[in-house]
Length: 179
Image (cartoon, helix red, strand yellow):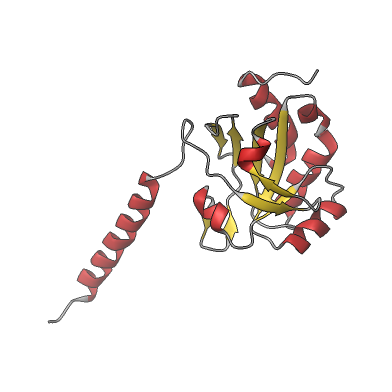
């Protein structure tokens, strides 16, 4: 059977559309249960979401790649202005699919005084639906309450204002201050 180039192009685009559209149907949203995880971090510890949530609300700021300009700007924003977040009853992390050693170097270079989670298997990134092109994470920030419910997902992160935006969103969500 002969298929014209026009037909082939149409069906190719149709299948690409269906794949894209179906991937959008299961998108995590506020109100969904956050996937649990256990990831190693730049501070030498391993963090399991369900354990951290026993003490604090959690913020996870996913970023694409360590040592790239936007990610460096975001990390520096959190390092320099993290005091705005530390006043609140929250544990916050950055996270990427970079290897742990790279994230340790990234944290040291940017004087990050908070843990940077490493997901080199990309399994957690897949569960959080932030993995793009199978290579790196999208720059999305997740706010998760003690019941593992996603309170908000910021899909329009401003790297240079990351700390200020996180603190403002936590205040808007009614997160209390540390005593």
